[in-house]
Length: 220
Image (tube, rainbow, N blue to C red; front, side, top):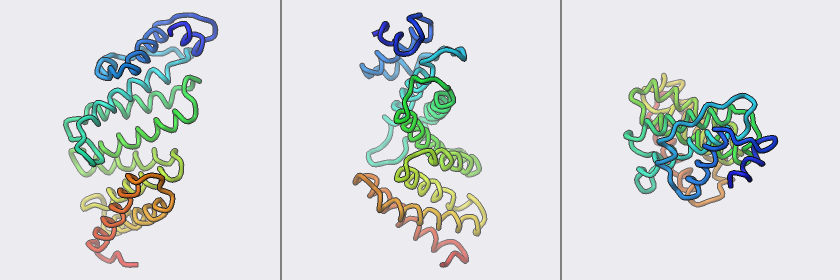
């Protein structure tokens, strides 16, 4: 596997520490050894090294998977005890996406954006203060813009609903957010490709209507 990986990630076949660790990560990923990968520290890459984006992505994925292993059935997010893993996953996904090499294709990069959006949203849900939650929800909303339209709408509906909750802003801001959540959920429902997304969008639409009714002067 190492020789094939070397050929795929480098010009020539030079086995660097990064390529060596990436080979270990890919073997661990195939075997489901997520804790082993999460416990490792990814090597720092030089600017000219290829394979770094995939190295960071696998490390992020390991932390993301371990965090979501603690999620209750049908819950969107895992409990607050997973915040360190969620934070590391979000940071490592960002690190991977900022690494300009060819080790990830467009579909894989899109998946990283989706996983990072989910991690940021769950960090918002588990934030210690509403101020921190608003900052993280806004970050998730921005990250979702990189996703295909149906998924972008779903996550933006989720984040806008978060931004409409009590304490997230004044009544005018919250009203704007809850209307945005409802609009995005409505558009996304027509595009939803699976029953899980459809059920979540129905819940968002219901919660948006309920929350809108509780905000002063939020008619129309």
